[in-house]
Every structure is written in structure tokens, then in C-alpha cells.
Image 1 (cartoon, rainbow, N blue to C red):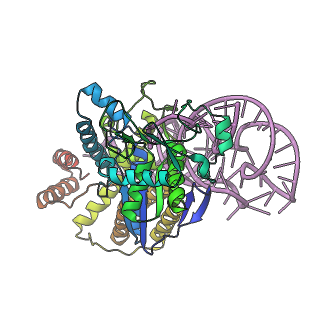
Image 2 (image 1 turned 45 degrees about the horizontal axis):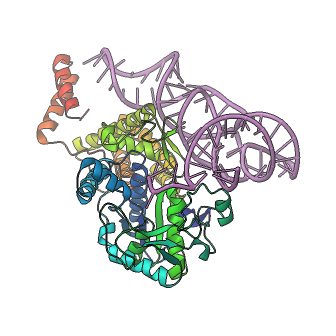
Image 3 (image 1 turned 30 degrees about the vertical axis):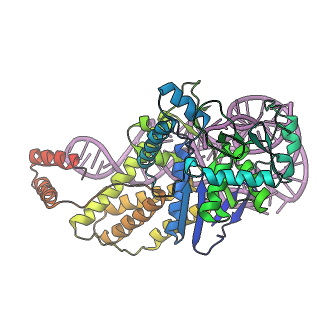
Length: 444
RNA sequence: GGUCCCGUAGCCAAGUGGCUAAGGCAAAGGACUGCAACUCCUUGAUCACCGGUUCGAAUCCGGUCGGGACCUCCA
């Protein structure tokens, strides 16, 4: 297994810290609105990472947080004249719905900032006591200059950052690059702390959560590329300060999704919420996996349509093979793979092992589709067909695609038999009627 | 202004030093079929441009042009 590590900017062999276990953490959403389709990319990709590791036998401890205290939530709460926590709850529920829509699992630990307040305050307190942070008028800032390796993740140097600083001047900060750990707030929900009533900055939560939940450094820390700087850089800085090392071995970042080659933004009026996408979410999932995760992905209606069609095609292929086996009472759970299927499987797995190259994995999925279509048209190929269906099952499990095909009921089976009979007897009126019924049931 | 990424057939997209540059979509032609749908087969690129390194480059280096990201608590 090779993974591109943003921290070293290299492809590295994956070595878990604990045998047979993968501990991973993915930065979750700030719950102030529905998620847009760009947010769905890490939701889908890291779900695939998890699925793959589980498939090859690892136990995966997957954690992704909710930022439920934030300026944006306060703004939203004021707009809607609602309590901030009500807003947060609403969008957490909406988030889970969207996660399920796109076929990712919601079964993972999802800590919230509000549940971690004391751990966050403790962490900041330690930073202050050890001189890595300073207090000014009830605000607390991290002293970036104390961390030698600051900038290593995002490939920046402190000097460059200072030179090109477009950072707003905050006279309270010793250095414009210093980031907020705690701040007093004029409005919104506040929490008591040694520095007064206020709220934590954004960067401490993940560190506090990871330390509490995993009790030490983890294997994989993931998120969108925009989190590299400053968010992940700041997480690393805080962790180096107290623990002397980066918090995770491998840092993985997915590239951004654009819409019609433009970044999604409210001002550009090209925001697309996952919930509004409508239609075929499996097709959308396939679309997001069709490009390597580190490359940018451009959304257009046409591009999505291509993969919606592709998914329909794969599903049709699978379904036909499945029912052919079902009719023949040959739908065994286990199957042997012949040389061709093994070749496809090996290529698929190799693609996944190569830094989760889902684009190439999907190519193999398509090759399997072609193979299956050939076998569906052959007589006496049921063994190979069974192998194909079971290999499909494996690929679908890894990629999180679900064709939702169930065995035929007795009634449906009878209709199918009647249809076949009618065709054989050239009773085409009847056959066409039955065909329609079967098509409605999704059998044909 | 600073840092970084990208530019492969009409479109999407793998490949990052070496057999004839994967795969998909679209298009055209063909096969199959009671009709249709589905499916299958065949057909396309010297890799933005210029120069360099090398026995050999889409793949490394330099430059030019074009596009994008981050530096603003956006995945």
C-alpha cells in the first residue's frame, strides 16, 4: 500500500502504528448550512479509504468531527432567529442524510466541539503555560515563531509567508502569522475559561479530540486541500509544541471540486447542495471517484450525466448476470475466479494500492462489465458469470457502490418464465406485455 | 506581491524515463434482434509551445504562453 503523504510530499509505503489497525481522522464540517457537492468529495473518498483498509483486513477506527461552535453558525443563527445549537443540530442531521445519500457510511465516531470544551481549554492552557501561546485582553494566540518546522506541511517558509502577507493586521498579535486559540466574543454562545468568557479558535479542536480519542498520534489525517494551510499546519504546530511530533504519520488531502471551472461560492451563484443534486447519487459517487483524489475535479451537468449513464450501465450488466444466475438457481455465495477475472481483480487491487487510484480501479470495473456482458450472452458460462458477479460484489463493496439487486420472488420468476415461453412461441403481443412488466420490476 | 499545482484525442481521464501513450463518453461504420432496448466488434492523439539533459522523455531541467489553487477560521 502506497500513500502520498503531504507532509513529505512523497509516495510512502503504508505502515500502521499498531498492527492490523488503521487510526484515521478526517476533518468534518462546520454545521452552518447544507453541504455542497465539493464537501461530498472527502466524504466519499475517505469512506473509500476506510472501506479498502477494511476489505484487506484492517480494523479501521474512523473519526470525523463536527464544528458546532463558529462565527458562521452565529451568523446563521441571527439570520434565522434561532438558537445556535438548534442550527447546529439541524445541519448535523442534514449532514448525515447527505452522507448516506452519496453512499458513505455514517457509522463512525463524530465528536463535537461543544463536547470537547474542557479538553480544548486544557490544551490551550498547556500551550500558554509552556510559552507557546500568549494572552492579550482575553484572547489567546499561538506563537508560531516557536515552531521551527512551521510550514513544512504546506511547503511554506515563515519568511515567505511574512513577505507575501495579505494577513490583516491585528495589533494584538506579536506576529501576523500567529493564530487564534481562544477569543472573547461580543455575541453568540460563550464558554468560561481561565482567560474569560469566549470561544475556542478553530485549530485546537482536532488536536484535542485526536489526543483524547486515540491517546496519541494516528496513522492518517485527512481533509480537503484547502485545510493544508493554515488549519493542518496549525494542528501540527500545536502538537509539536506539547508532544514534540506531528500528530499523524500520513497526511492526505483531496483536491478541490470546481463547478464549470470555477470555485464554488455564493457570490458566483454556483453553489450546488448535495441534497439538491437529485437523481442518481451512485452516479455522482462514481463521478467523484473517476478522477484521482488529489487532482482537481470539475463538475458540469454533462460530466455528471456521463457517470450516471455509466453507473446505469454497470448496474444493468450486474443485474442481468445476477438474474440469469438466479433463474438457474446458481447464485452461490462463493465463487472461483478464472484467470481473466483474477487478472482484473489484481489490476483493481494494484490500482487501489497505488495511493487509492480509483480512476484506474474504475477502469477495471468497466473491464469486468465487458467481461460479464460477454458471458451473459454465452451459453454454458454460468460458472464464469457467478465469478463475475462475486467479483463485482467485491469491487462494489470497496467503492461503496450499491446496485440494490435482490433475488426474484416466485411471482416474478413465473412472469419471467411466461415471457420466455411467449417469445419462444412467437406470441409477441403477450411477450411485449410481459416484457413491460419485467422492465418495470427492473428485471430486464 | 509570495508559495504551489496543472495543460495528454471533440469531451472526461490514466500513465511521470524505455514494448505499438490505458479506459470511458461522444461520433462513424458493422454485428445481434420478431420489433425495440440492451450488448458486442471496428475506427482516432506523439502528449500547450521552444530549447536542453539522455542511447532514449508525455514523463527530468530551463524558458514562453494558457488555466487554477492557497496565502481571507471555505472540504
